[in-house]
Image 1: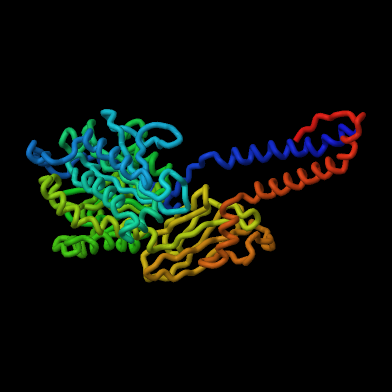
Image 2: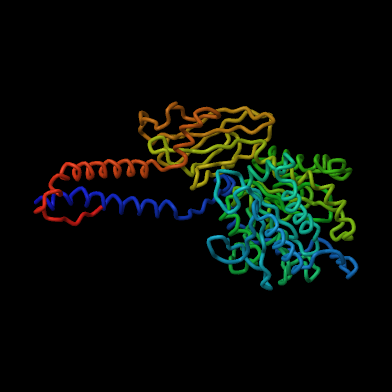
Length: 510
């Protein structure tokens, strides 16, 4: 009887230990967060099935210039670009990592081109490869094979950040507060072939699913480079991005096409924010904002050059990512000797655009009041038909907004009460956390000391503690410690018996 009674707390302890291990295992599983566009935006394409005729894919809007050997001299080949990326990774290992096609603990599946060229990506951060409650930005170059300036500038950008981290305030801000991902070339095959399309002669910037036309809905017909970008966006939960093109000097913003296929200004729900982002780039540029062709150096895509199946609109609708299409050189393939000047003209624009995702807008996290757990809630702005989703991992959200505006921000999650509050966004970002009560339980006691539904600045100490640990695991640890205490106390009370020479020796389960 004594043996059975002594094993009871041990058996309970074993069960709790197994429960704790299972909870830890489940909590460590990777969960992919996919931020999508607003429902109303997605529903706009609901009527498309009624159309009987769809426009055929147009690969080229203009005659391609002949790329000569002289024009390519001084540009990195694909193999030289790969070497440059690997050299950078070795030199700047403390603030970067390089990943490409493959699966491992340190690699993410990005993809390969039609001809099997890996799509190398550089990530720059003070904690590369680690998930943090920080916004992520991506740059993509060389979408069109005959527009190679972007791939050169992106390698220069990576090296500049490495050289100036902890010396330049802007470089330090980006490295510490953003996860920057750089894909120098999306179309290495097109570059090698010196043409716009990929190895299958498909224009990759017409190959994405479109909100108005179903021409790219067949997944099996989608190009591997396109699939790679789509999978990448689903994995990384980007806040904003930009693709670098050539042939003009302007910052292009959504929408890129119109529902009636006519050429006219067609604003997306976040038109004001996109105009702000485009202006950040244009005004930071040496002469883009002085353009006589484009007022202020920015343009609505549908008003200038309507396209369908573009990457920019797809990112905004389906990826929860605010993307610009940046035309950074009047000439598609300028002489390599001009690259240093083009780099200097665009350097501050690129840096300021990345920094803008932490310098403005509204950022925060969403928690459950009853458990303190992060919630992948939806965050919407009243009057703007679009939403972003907080991440599963930390419940963090990052919502781009134009400065100098008054906004009503709402966080909602099925099973929880919706919360709203008004904020004033000036020239700096606003930090706004939400704590949601269970639906139908208005008096649920909050685990947060202040009891507020949201907080912008205070109570950071307690909130920070609860952010770092799941409440259930914390309670299990407390129970385990208490049971251990009881077990040791019982052992101490029986200690005199073990000193008796005739006492039986027992096997203990600890």
